[in-house]
Amino acid sequence: MKAMTYRGPYKIRVENKPDPRIEHPHDAIVRVTLAAICGSDLHLYHGMMPDTRIGHTFGHEFVGVVERLGGAVTNLKVGDRVMVPFNIFCGRCFFCARGLFSNCHNVNANATAVGGIYGYSHTAGGYDGGQAELVRVPFADVGPTVIPDWMSDEDALLLTDAYSTGYFGAQLGEIAEGETVVVLGAGPVGLAAAQSAWLMGAGRVISIDHLDYRLAKAREFAHAETVNISEHRDVVVQMKRMTDHLGADVVIDAVGAEADGNVTQHVTSAKLKLQGGSPVALNWAIDGARKGGRVSVIGAYGPLFSAVKFGDALNKGLTLRMNQAPVKRQWPRLFEHIRAGYISPRDLITHRVPLDHIAEGYHMFSSKLDDCIKTVVVPSEG
Ligand SMILES: NC(=O)c1ccc[n+]([C@@H]2O[C@H](COP(=O)([O-])OP(=O)(O)OC[C@H]3O[C@@H](n4cnc5c(N)ncnc54)[C@H](O)[C@@H]3O)[C@@H](O)[C@H]2O)c1
Ligand SMILES: [Zn+2]
Ligand SMILES: [Zn+2]
Image (tube, rainbow, N blue to C red; front, top):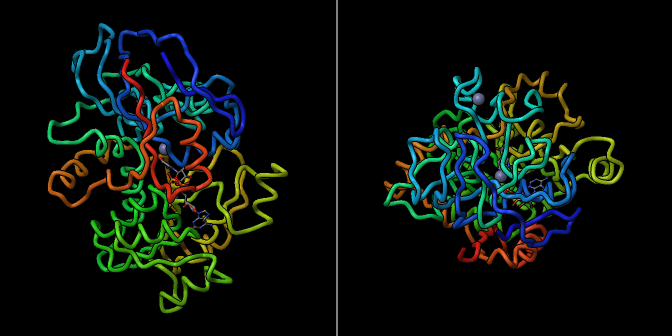
């Protein structure tokens, strides 16, 4: 089969790899019909994630058709159109029993640090991902869901990660009616978080980024007020100005460890590797939230230490909540919202590229060219 493969930082290509096989009775092999490139893939692409091995296939956001099934999978059949959550989880362990699907204890040798994720380096289990013609889906009786007839592949695709993650970010903010929510980052995840904040009763939603075209999308897609970082000497001061000088009730970090905006943080993380990432957005969230407010972190941070302003969070009495999104938990409600026409996750998609051209897709998304927001990869016919 054809698959995207990692060759080192900023280098990927499409190669022929052996077709994945059923390795366990609970496996399925899925023929991918659509995959997406996620902001999290950029951390891998930039060489930021430990133990990203040459030859690894990325891709944790995908939908497809069941091609083969292990003998123990009884709730799917060959030919089913399925959406596959980005987390791999067993459904049976202590954590799965509590709905903590992204924290499953049975899918990663490194499970005390992070759960299992498709195509997300050996730090997250070493599973090959879905930016390929075929993918092995472990615990196929637990994760994948048959896509309802009325739902498009593109909406389903966005629920396997980006949209559900944004929605989860808003949930973690525990938004009370009328509250002011600031969302840092207007990528697909931040845009979904901003839109979801309204669904949870927000009174104001403010999106912050430094890319004008994404802020335009935040106004159109999420009806948010917007702030362009580059127009303010100190974006935290601007957040305070907009919130009676108290700070926002809720701030959502939808940026993660590769945030721009602070040279020292950038040099100590990306260049000197003295910390695992640049927590600029997280520190802005801590500074921009009001005392007693909430900070929700869905932007990705790796397992290594980062210089977070923890003392300020403590002294302000903030509640910090965070996780990799256990996306399947969000699906029942999001299905209802799509069906009712309240949301249309597929409107985030700006580019569709064939798998053969995936390297250009990565370059465009990474460099934010051509007003790119969300790129979808279409594998060629098998
Ligand atoms: N927790 C999870 O389960 C989960 C799931 C999916 C994605 N993620 C993470 O969410 C983050 C966003 O993903 P995405 O697909 O939207 O990525 P993206 O790269 O498209 O978007 C990130 C946005 O943040 C902006 N930005 C950079 N520095 C900023 C700063 N200091 N303040 C405000 N905005 C800033 C960028 O301009 C960009 O528009 C990534 O870190 C990704 O790894 C986490
Ligand atoms: Zn992702
Ligand atoms: Zn589990």
